[in-house]
Image 1 (cartoon, rainbow, N blue to C red):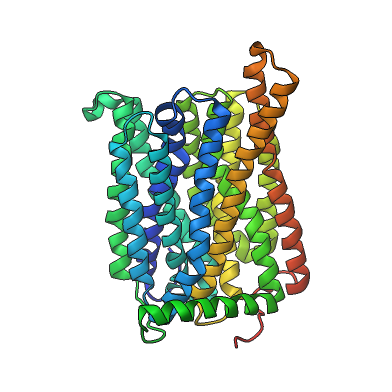
Image 2: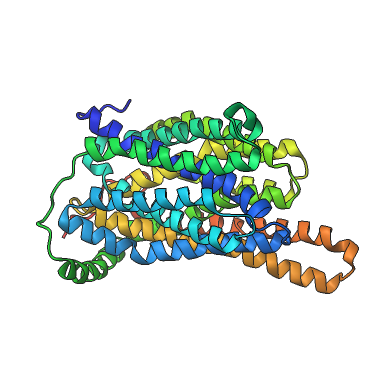
Length: 447
């Protein structure tokens, strides 16, 4: 438990990660890619269904990215972070519950609901992240941020265990088959997310920064504030370079999270094996996120970020060439060791760079960069996979070669993600040159 003055507020803040991580695990990383490929997009070529999923992720990311800085600026001016957090949570919960009623073959409806769920999930994270400085002091940012991610791994993982049990043994739960179990799993995520979020709304304080203006004035002020935020971010060289670095490397992380199961299915791995590997990620990620918080404190935040990026590069290369079932489990173990750490330390490092009293505004920019990045990765995978398939089919049009061509195109698509980690590491290195090694707290005074 992090050492802070208001433990109840810290627990309330962390419980939101516990709540919404059910969407990230059961829906986003786990069952939706499987159900989309095998139920809502049944009978479609694997590269085409992967492209559909990638573009769905990209469209949702684009919408969130476009509105993130506006929402952050408005929330800072009106002191309404929790109100916005509740609104986006309600959108995500409703969209997730809708999966229960979608019939087979409705891939477009599934993409629309999934996009709405991602908008709710990602939009809420803007205001959740902005509440971090409210519950943690400067000396405990790393620990509290890591505690939130650890709670998310544990909470999302626990519900995921129940959901996996429902699909493997549906009769234990009075369900007809695994299809019904997956549909009911989506409904349990909606209840879990909405229910545990109540602790955040009741326990976390909402500091009032400025009196709330009218809606019209808020929007106008927000757009003016965006330009100011961008100018101030550009003037702070370490902050600006870090945002660019984060844009690229977190895109690689998000792409692996969202597309891993779809990728495994496209290579012919069994869905139960892939789901089991995701369970491993959750329960390895719980202690690993806590350890990374300590590692950042004692070894250095930037060094720890470089370590995590390096591991993701190796993961991407390994995934491109893997052939055996055990390799997917090895990759899942490696992801679990660094996934929570790179997310938690990126957030706490950025929290040190932003001006005091403008956390929602600058976290809106932070989340905008992350969500714009989430456009590139899935769309990159989908586009590269389709392009590779088209080129390979032209060169080898024989029908008996189709399966091999689909496999090779899929591997080329995942290899493209390596570029994002390389560019992110280079930019982070340049940010280190400007900031000095592991001195993120030495920022220019706010203006």
